Length: 65
Figure (cartoon, rainbow, N blue to C red):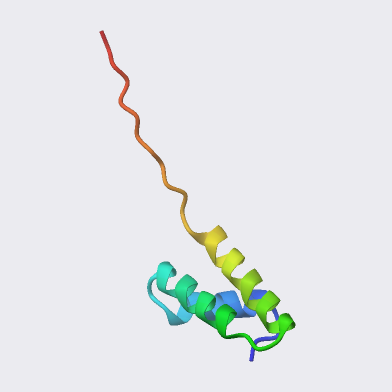
């Protein structure tokens, strides 16, 4: 098992090629958690993984007259 959130986050990123898959797997661990400590741990791992996810940049076209 992982001792810190940083270790778990690094392992999930290394194990899964796609960041979305890593987030989904961490969410599965979170929902399967049997103790509150485990749930909190995986919830914080999910938060850290979501911080790594790139932000969507919307492109707005301006109307030039």
